[in-house]
Image 1 (cartoon, rainbow, N blue to C red):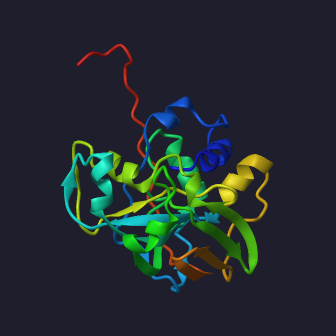
Image 2: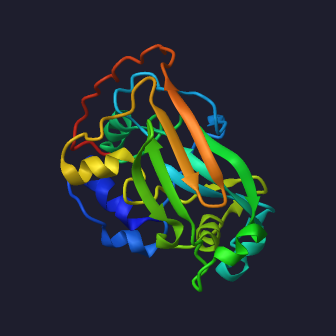
Length: 248
């Protein structure tokens, strides 16, 4: 979650309080997603089982070139092979339910992730780096030909080098790992807009919608939303009543 504007809008939609928490700026928060959910830049994307509020997320990802542990930010560029457009599709209703429990997201985020259309090597973007090491690349997303969001990667709170360094603290990043930037602001996803307006406009994605994402020098993805398969429902959890005074 490297874009504060995104955090502000999403917190207004999914949490009880809006705004960017002070803790956000202490370190780049992230989660591990599903490596088996990758789809191509022009593949159809299915609505997840049970989802009624489907959303896109405009991101860029760095692809790790070699293994490293506790990598220093000053050295992290040596561990990035290249960059690619990354769409982290989201079942917002499921995500909201999960995160009320204080953990997740899990099933709200694991159904599909678009990568493509090209993996652009890091050296190709050297001329587009700011003095702070951020990528100066315009990005936009449209639904059915109407542009919904625009932002620039230079608005990240941390550079990709810093994201990789943090992800590797006390553990490993491995060659082939994909590190998403987090969703860009200014309409990089629908739920951000809903959080600010208080209503679901633009409306959630529906069957037949065409989502296109364009990032300078990285190309354009185009995915059509299609109906998903049903999946067996899980029964409600058993309710266990315990004695609050009991000690183990």
